[in-house]
Image (cartoon, rainbow, N blue to C red; front, side, top):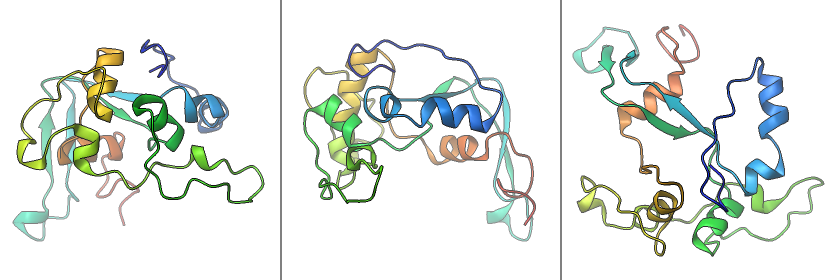
Length: 172
């Protein structure tokens, strides 16, 4: 997602992690664009730890009824400022570490309500697009895509990245 124009472009998958790092670990993708990954509807996804030692810890299989997109990287201070027009982060001064740009660090000190534009009591209410206001409503207005926090299941499916082992990193 281009944060200046709202244009959404598909750039395709890259062959290796190194190629992905070369493309996306740049100032452009830490300031002016957001990288999202599509999780396709209709796919079957397993969540849970697959260790059936109690009913609460067994795995569960989910079939998604709609596509969703999830951010690949944390939102940086520069991206947040580009969308909302201010940077709420407490650590904004240069650190003095060579090559470290503080604006490329994740934004922090942002309350849930400051991202969504409504209280947690209204968590079931869809985010409404708005040219002014909070982060998700502005992103939705800018790109015409739905933005919101992922559910616990959506997050786990994305974090597992298709793995079918007991844990996303392997068996133990």
